Structures are given as structure tokens and as C-alpha cells.
Image (cartoon, rainbow, N blue to C red):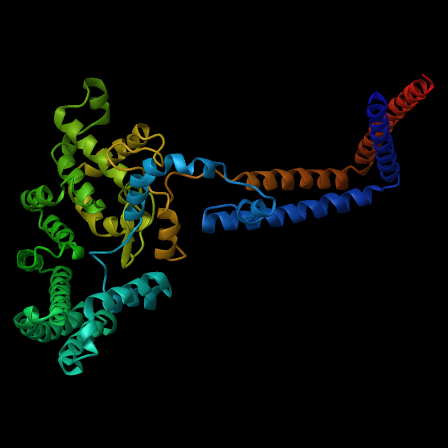
Length: 502
């Protein structure tokens, strides 16, 4: 047994002697020009890899090398995810969080979305940029198909004809009208046709499931038209008229919460500075059983801040402490920031705004843009509100050091927001990411490799003799190691001979 071990050690030593001798001979035959070419080429290749990795990380939020190694190389090498062995034990405990994550990563229609022809297209004509992504417009087409069609249309084409006329007016108002005035005229024409369809289907809704589906479709069309007409009034400066139309619509169709008309109402009431009515609307919709939004949370924070912001001073507060009203305002701001941490940078104009998309992701950058685009003016109107926000919003993150794992007042922040926001927002916008991601290891590694090889190339080019001495020193090191391994090999051979004799 000992003989076998010694023979193995001898073979290993012989292999190391051969390798080191070969390396030493190879290094002795190289010239400084070779080192310049070697280090320069290495620096160029690592620099190209670094540029590609950085571009890929900025665009997709992950390292390309890391993604390929995890997705493709690990299965080939037989790697197994460590967390898979614990799935059976943690599946029940994670079920509620998974369902919450799925619901919070759902894409919602923007209640305050702009008119495509009169606003989005005009932006494109002026700037040459497309403010909407294909994914966003495709979602809008699916919404129109869901709201404005039903299964009975192909069964009774004659009955569906007025609805198609109404739908045509809607599309013309949304996409072809170049001004809000033109869009309002087309929506009024659509309203006449839509009201007739709604009255007819209302009388027949109990005659069967097909009539009921038709009435549901006509109801959606009517609510959509009236809501867009109210938004036209708001954009044309007839804010009180818009508020009345929205209130009437909410009273007439209280169950249609999918349009989120209360958010349109809140924005219009803030424009009128009717803060008492704003508080009344919040009392109804800022309920623990109802889904939250940035509009709800930040409007509640604005009302709380309005009570103390005009006299708030961070120096005075640090000396005497916060009063009860100031504490309530700060807690409301922390609650809003925890729900959507992207909003403050837009309200404080630390980040430039773009046109909001037609769909938003709650708690994501798209929702922050949609909120700040319409509500920044309301925050500016309240004296000191932005100053209070500036002084307190970052304190939220001290309460939630691990936002992806545990929240304070809400569920943990969903990890899917970045991916969905990149599909909803145009390419020229830099998507806000929360929490901030650390640079991947491979970007740091390639940056270090590129810097090191570039430094070697520069030193070799500028000081070829000095680098030649350095290369000879490396060669001498290999020679010394070769001698050491030769001596070990000789001692192992002698030991083998003695064992054979015994």
C-alpha cells in the first residue's frame, strides 16, 4: 500500500517537473514584443466583454455570463438548485406570499391614461420618439376587445351593428382626433349611440345569458364613454363639470370598480383644492379591504402634510421633536413610500418625467410616473409639502432593511416589477429599480481583468527592459520550483528502491 502511494507521488512530481521545465523554456524564448501583444489583446478582449456585460446589465438587470451559466451550464453539469430540496417543507408557508406577489405584479389599466391621437401621437410628431411600447398598445387592444365585444355579436349581426358604430366612434376619438376638442365631439356622438344600445339591452337582459352578456358589454361601453368625456372636460379646464360627471357615474354604476374612476375624481378635486371632499373620497376608498394605489397612499400623505408643512422646519423638529400632527404626516409619507418607493424622485424632480403609459404596474416605476405626471402640480401647490417629503422619505428604508423579504405595512416588495416596467416603458427611459442591485461579480471581475491587463500592456510598451527582467524573474521562479520537484522526485525514487529491497 505504501509503495503504491509513493509511486503515485513520484508520478505527480515527475509531471510537475516536466510542466515547470516546459514553462521555463517557453518563457526564456519570448521577446518583449510578444508580451505587449499578449497583454494588449487580453485587455482588448476583456474590455469588449466588460462593455457588453455593462450594456446587458443596464438593459435586462442581470449579468449575461451569470444568466447563461445558471440557465444552461448548470443543468449540463448536473447542478441542482439548493432551494429545491426545501420546496416541500416551505410550499404551504409561501402560498399566501406567492398569491400576493402574483396579484401585485398584475398590470392594470392607467385610470388617467392620455388620448393616443391628441396627446401621445402629438408627442411623437414633435420629438420623433414613441412614448408607448408595443406591449402596452397590445394590452390596450386586448382591453378594447374584452370591454366592447361579446359572444353574441356573431350570432345576431343586426343587433351588433349599433354597438360597432359606437365602437368606431370611440376608436376615432381615441386614435384619430388630433385635439381634445375633436375627441370630445366624437365621444358625444358615441354617447348617443351607446345610450340607445344600453337602453335596449337593459330591457332584454333577463331573457337569457346572451342578452345578459350583451347588456354587460353595453354597460362597459357607456361607462367608458362617460369617463372619457369627463376627462375631456377636465383637460379643457371645465373641472367642476368633470367632477359632477364622475360623481354621477360612480352613483349610477357603483359596482364597476375596474375603471378606478375615484382616482380621476381625486385628481380633479385636488385641482379645485377641495380638500374636504378629497378626504371624504379617501375615507371611502382608503380601506384595508380595498386594493391600494399610489394615488390613494400619496394623496393621503399630501393631506396629512398639508396640515403641518407650511411651518415645518427640520432644525426645529430636531430640537423639540415632532408634534403629533407632524408624526402623523411623516408616518403617512413613510406608508406611501413603502407602497411605491419610486414616486419621491419624480415629485422632487430628481428624475425626469415622461408621458405615462396606458397600463401601469402597481408599486412599480410605471405607476410612479403616472402618478407624478398628474399630481406633481398638486404637491407644489401645497406650501412646504415637497420640503417635508424631501426631509423624511428616505427614513422609510430604515424600517424595511430587507424589502424583498418583509414589509412594514404592506406585503414584501414584489421582485417582478423591474421586468414588467421594462416592457411597459419606452427604451429611452431609464427604469427605476428598487431595491438597488449590486453590480454582478462578472462585471467586477472583467473590469479588474481589463484594468490589470491594460496596465501590463502599458508597462511592457513603456518599459520593455524592466518587464523583460520581470519575465526572467518569473522564469527563474519556475526554475527553482522545477529543481525542488526534481529533488522530491529523486527522494521518492530512492524510497521506492529501498522498499523494493526490503
